[in-house]
Length: 203
Image 1: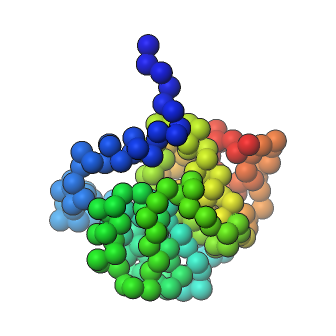
Image 2: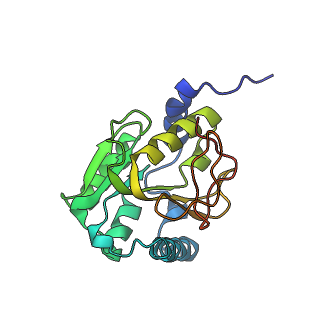
Image 3: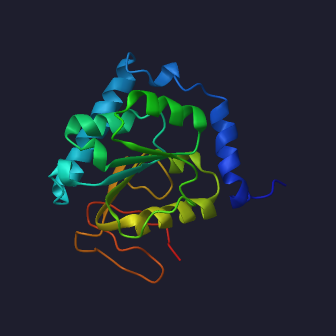
């Protein structure tokens, strides 16, 4: 019988899984109509949800992307009007971190490391974003540690989650501290009616 994954090994597991893929995976090239359509749909959903949460002055918002990869989402946020000096990305994998640094303006802060251990001041950011990170994680305990770290970094703004994961009800979800919570329970984060993980508990 297989042993459950050790959360201490999850970061190494992610490195090993992504080592089997190239940085420029042709499946996700924007020359592929499906990839381009998915990008546009995600950006439209992000704009709709942020504006709905009352976060419409993009240039004034500080945003951290966890799992920023080669910088594609951060480039998209720049197109939407976010300021480079207020954007930060954390990426575990060295090759993707280097690719992002090569394509993004110098004003964007990029950090290579494990987002569960990178020191981020509590409540220092307006938005924390992740896109498909949780669907790449096999260890539930590691998912909880990461979600807790992300949530603690957000001030009165929102946490954006994009990509399928067991606790994500929608492909793009806004978890907002600014919106009135729909429910609060022991050990759980408050969540907005916009959408919030129903299963994830934060001890």
